[in-house]
Amino acid sequence: MMISSTLELSNLPATMRQHLRAVSKGYLLTMTTDSTTKRCIACGLEKPISEFYMEKTSTGNKPYPRCKPCHIIKVNSRPLNRVRTDKPLVASEATAIKFLNRNGIFTASGKLSSYKYLDAVAWGCVRIEIKTSHKREGRFDFRFSYQQKNKRLQADIIILQCFHNIKTTYHIFPANHPAFYENGALKSVSYSLRGQSNDHGLTTEIMNAHENAFHYIEEARQNIIRQLLAR
Ligand SMILES: [Zn+2]
Image (cartoon, rainbow, N blue to C red; front, side):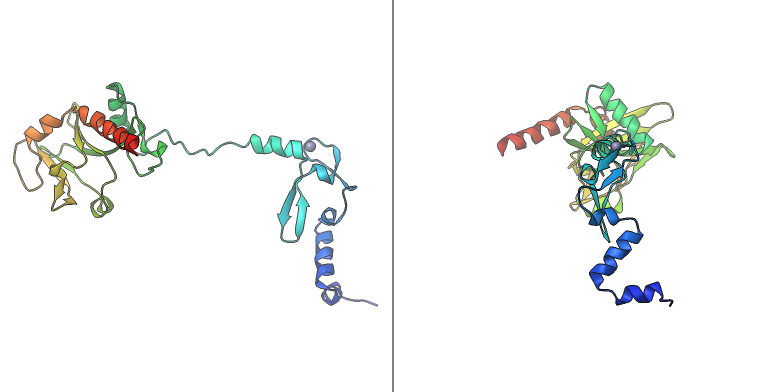
């Protein structure tokens, strides 16, 4: 007499069917007692099932292929997250970060901080937005993203990095400097070397006054510390 195995299975109670499926998949050990042993694929030793961690599967618990000590060795030797958090996303940011460090201001890529969107962080707390421009037709243009314009700029300091033909200059501003705002909203700015002024113009006076103005970073740091201590 031939009885289809599927037909036979479907006639069985659910718990029995589950058990049979487990057996057919080699999970029989999960249904047995501690007296059952299993060979570890790493050390090759035959060990009691209690010496193996259990893995939850849809059909019940199943022992890991490695015994507990071998499993721990494997987990601990896994490589950590390979994403490099110490490297800035953009080369120009790396240049600016190097510049600040050369001038005695400990600065790291923003990715190292809890603010992943930040360009850079000085002294572990001062949030820095770096805007870069190459000289084009005698002027530098610095644009803020749509997001930055619509939300508040999440930074304490704005650094304008100007790539001239042979040198790079850095202009350091507090993030709330009026030159960056119009009716309370952040705006893109530009700086013309010919001294032409327009609505978005940063004057030569402003740019010169803020070139290498490192004290703004120190003031921002002290403000943050003062606020922390006042809590
Ligand atoms: Zn082992």
